[in-house]
Length: 102
Image 1 (spheres, helix red, strand yellow):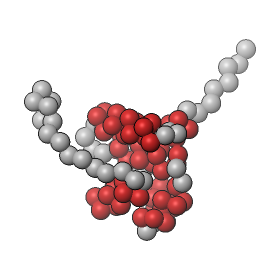
Image 2 (cartoon, rainbow, N blue to C red):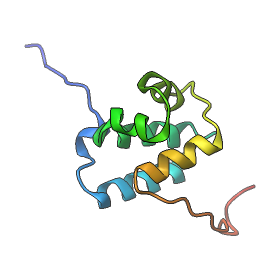
Image 3 (tube, rainbow, N blue to C red):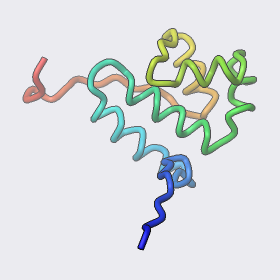
């Protein structure tokens, strides 16, 4: 008997603002420190919403946005701010807990 597997896609489960917030918070916490997980998570959120519309809103091509939010992507900080604002999100910086290694 062959088992059928389907590809799991986080974007399929990001149905509410709360889902998106909790998902992004977890990805920020688990990011290895290079922003790769955060970029991928923003890509998931963009796909859950309207990727083409987001690309227009931030002033890049759909392909440019896909590349910027990929594992290999290296978007500017300005583009990341534009993306978060276009998604209706804000970034917040807080102090790390003292137990967190530097």
